[in-house]
Image (cartoon, rainbow over the protein chains, first blue to last red):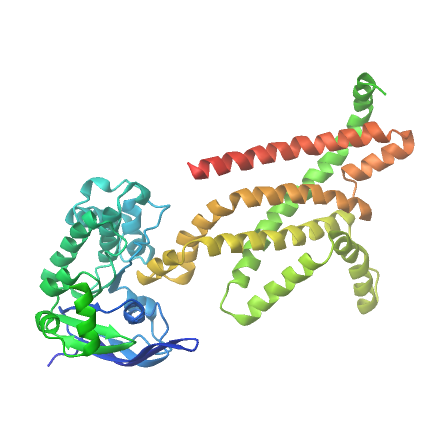
Length: 244
Length: 225
């Protein structure tokens, strides 16, 4: 059997005296789409942010393609290059045009020449349906458009893993769809995705696996339809009765 | 005393005013340039993860903020040379212009570093995270993503600091720097024309600071647009 794309063992995270993650174990295979759901404050975003070490873990180990990202001498920048991340607040660079937002990282790390990076930026923008916005500034775009640019920016590094941290939570309802559509397409193309989300419809239709996190632990994981229709844990039941 | 005599005295005053202003502007401008570099350095040390660097930066800012500039100027011009003399056993003197430059640079540098730090910290944390998540190094993220945004935020306060440094440079007359106030004092000693002399000194400063204030206001307006 092939080695897991992402392997998390015994992951814990404390903020001061607060234990946010209390021992997470999960293996995610290449091409798998995993949706992480749970009440707010459950630690699901922290878990995601540990996967590319935006958060330093307290204990436990995370292997990406068999390589530890949590060890002291890990080359974090190199691993991050193939682990893209999309944030709730988009975090586009406001002083750059859309084009430079997308070109910046590949050119800065000399993975592409400016010409190659620009061609790639245009291609990616077309792919997320924003081909005509190359010269726009982020502030001129709607939230949904900004988030699609953010996805294109992450894809410019040609990652094979994408992390999504509540990508539609800051959007007006009418813009959620356009972002989810782009994500759905990515999923169908075989991208390995970990998505923290409140979009139950997306989780049900697109995810290969649904992971329910509460109080810093994985309470339940499995086929989305199965977990949603027959939740085993009391807290999972309570959660779904509120959101479905 | 009437307006025409005030204007007359300006003619006699103007050579000394010009000489004093030249020195004032020289010491202010050079100090501000040095202070910008010093400010960036101290600020980066202050926000660094290395404890020792942070400690040095904090200590420096603590000293500068906690003592009057007049004391700093006396310390650099009189006290330090004596210390060096005692330690080395040989004569040591420091040029008054150099001492003035050092005083003003250190002083403005400390305040500018705090202005930079405030601006950097006011750039959204998500900017650094987004850049780092793309595999971009800390230094490159700082240079290309954080600092350009911080510079825009800090411009108005930076112009304000220029005004403060320009005005503070008059304190250096106390160690004998031949700037505007020093020249004015000599002139008054010779002619007893306190009113006319100090009126014109004040007007000169007002003119320069008004220009700077206008610059600051224009930048602020542009930023809001």
